[in-house]
Amino acid sequence: MAKYIFKRILTAIPLIIVITILCFSLIHLAPYDAIDAMTTPKMSPEMVQMIREKYGYDQPVYVQYIRWLEGILNGNFGYSIVTKTNIFDELATRIPNTIKLVLPSYLTAYVISIVLGLVAGSHKNKWLDKLIDGICSLWIAMPTFWVAMHFIYLFGYKLRIFPILGMHTVGVNTLSDFLLHFITPYMVLTLAFIPDNVRYVRSSTITQYSEDYVMVQKAFGASKAEIMFKHVCKNVLLPVITKLGMALPTLVTGAVITETVFSWPGIGPYFIKAVQGMDYPIVMIVLILSSTLVVLGNLLSDILYCVTDPRIRKMG
Image 1 (cartoon, one colour):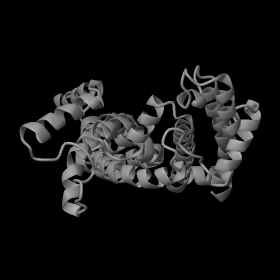
Image 2 (cartoon, rainbow, N blue to C red):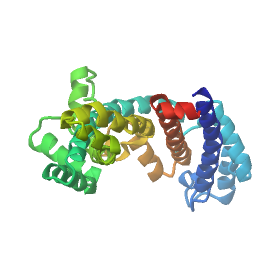
Image 3 (cartoon, rainbow, N blue to C red):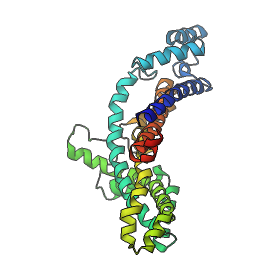
């Protein structure tokens, strides 16, 4: 097993390097660069050139990349061009805020999805399966920002049950105040995560019910409950557990729209403002972070699969 995990780690390292090169190159292929966000039409060409030299944008692209990568490896993420704030310090504050919102939402959605997926898959093509699958299809088609706006209108404006925006009331830093601000975006995110996971579990359940061992159990007179909980569940939960690894990037960048709508002080608003202000150092760091988490999520998924499936351990 250790050999298999080591192979996967060695595969992930060059992939992350390639991702950094791609992200850096794509940013530099954009029609505008970071200097455009700092200059005005009234500035002289000499002044613009001085600014370029100050930030190193007069150097060749490969030199800029090496200097940038060296800074990343040393923990120096650079500074925002617009606000002049340290990017690392901002991320260190905002990432925990995002995790506070996304992690409970995803875990709740995950548990609900397993239950609904098992129920739907075990009643294939029956009215219960069609009902669950139909609701999931409808909910997938609804944009998250649209659902969020309706929740804000209903619970924040019409019923006045929960606060509309932010993570805390200004000047109030209590747990109860946090929970009041937390509930509405939590509900929106939970509902957003459920449909895709339900379909995944449903598909796995249907696949397991078509296996020969289910037919054998039926021939031996096993009840539906015994087949479900003693046999099918174990095999369904194996890929479902490994899918948790794929959720790693979701913890950081999975709620950009929801955070922006609710003004939650996480990665979402920070990234959107950076894009709008052409603050390329921030955009680049967030893209690299998101892409790297995808690679690490796949790696974690492989490791979980190796741990839970003895066949993979034997192959390793």
